[in-house]
Length: 227
Image 1 (tube, rainbow, N blue to C red):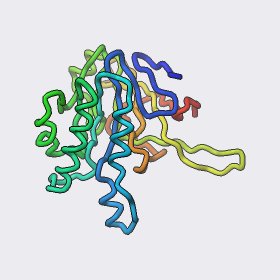
Image 2: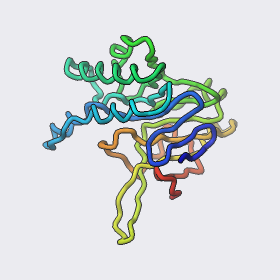
Image 3: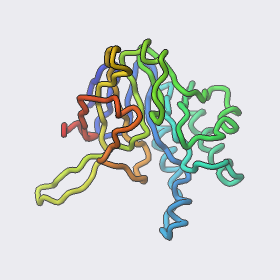
């Protein structure tokens, strides 16, 4: 069951969107366990679970909206090993993989450059939709060319209350109107939920960057309950 929003289809119960040619996901944060272990948590490596889920996506091409990595610094030997494995697994499952570079993805070109069908870019435009990670404002070329913009980065969540009035948080989609400047027309914005279910998110989205120019913000839980 799918929800249709502009030129993208959002998958019922899953953090995946589809355009006519591509499946779209964001925020893998591979290696996140390292930081949790440093903080005293006993966390099993989840890379294979995440990669298995990606390889099960039924589409020929894939767009990953950035933050393949969890770390911010230079890529060490250990991290390079599992990143090479991850990109190899992903590239072999799709005919073309586009990664829009995120704020965690410094040095990633050393990994992706080894794979002919993997493109690491700042932005990507396809079918009138502009794709980017979302930590920086889109280019002038993107907003002048596209009527829809798809990002990740924000890890949006929403508070939900059960029948006993117990509150918990769920990953959600965000829809909004983005106005590049006072004189320009708005374009439609879509925020994809984080693909990695083991990392944190927030229901308190800061009014900064792209969201400082956003209006008519709507949140949808992954099963399309409007909140």
